[in-house]
Length: 85
Image (tube, rainbow, N blue to C red; front, side, top):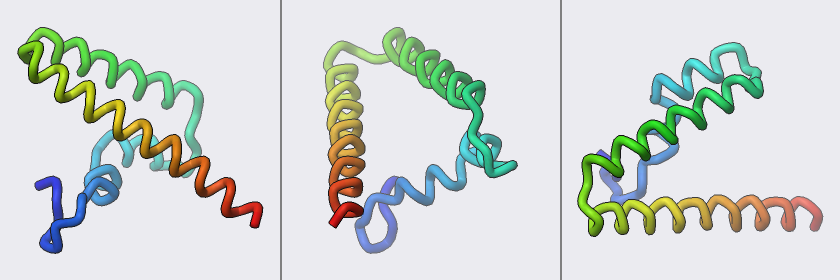
């Protein structure tokens, strides 16, 4: 589900195939409204998770979100640094 047959995280494929991504990218333009709508969707999911999961499970989820966001941030910085070389 999360990993392909080679054991590699399948996130790119999961994102590209998600209805949210398809709807936002349908016209090839990302609007401020689409970003806000997606942000609101994530916040609603997080609130649902707070009610559904235990404190220990929420801590695991928080760790995953923080580490994923860290990877995204450092990858963006790495990409920009290497574009300037």
